[in-house]
Image 1: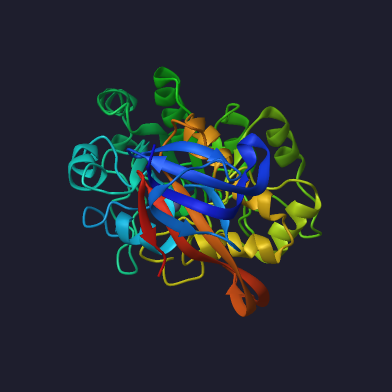
Image 2 (image 1 turned 120 degrees about the vertical axis):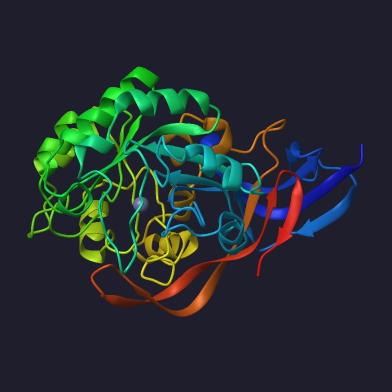
Length: 378
Ligand SMILES: [Zn+2]
């Protein structure tokens, strides 16, 4: 058989299959057709991946890509082209009122695979910009669990959970009630919740005590207030208890939710994130988060092992959304893969508190496969 595309000689890292070795990957008819060392036959197009890392198509679990429909949305395909993330999960940009539009105008035409958490609030994140900032969870009349369930059932092929944002900014001081409503809807749907907490109220304990195993705490390494660590760097008891219970920890870097000291303390305590994500949106895409590759590079700087970083952008988030097949390489599986370089040099990297370090290494995009087609990196 002649394959459509073969990627030859790369270091294939697929943590879901405990694979880290030099191998070839062949694609045919939009799917992976063969994986193996020199086991792969002729192809119409051959990509030389020697010196590169080849991973399952990267997943960014926390993005905002309802471009044009919300003030915070970035364009999904431009973002895929920049990062090589072939699966983009939107974290609650749209709610029951406008999910149909999100689907028709973004999800269906996108070349990237777009999945979504539906916002528990009726119109999603409707007012998030430098000029106008009104939290969508601040008026309890906007949170109707029956509407969330009704619309999520209509779009069950693309909805992977229910997003809720609570905190002084997102829910205007009304506390944990929006989280209760989101969990009520998620329970009925059999889906996880992704919870955002900014400044209290509600408290970290009020949020974590409500969350169920498999629910996702995003912004998990956020700085004070509501940080997972104390001022002395010790991890808080309620955080240890939440990890123990099976709460999923997602980075969601964004504009304000990743800082070096908290991240370092969490890694030192043996609590790496299950999922590393960018929380890319109009106000974080120009820094400090920039994008998924910059966010992943910050963990390289922190000394996290490359295969564990890849794990947190492949099988980790894939399991969080109940789609493990999207986070690994398998014959017959999706024809997606990402080809990365590790660039050496001096790269300034800045966290959400404005602290800049000089990193010696950073991830660069060599190219990616999406649905069996090759895209060269910029
Ligand atoms: Zn977000």
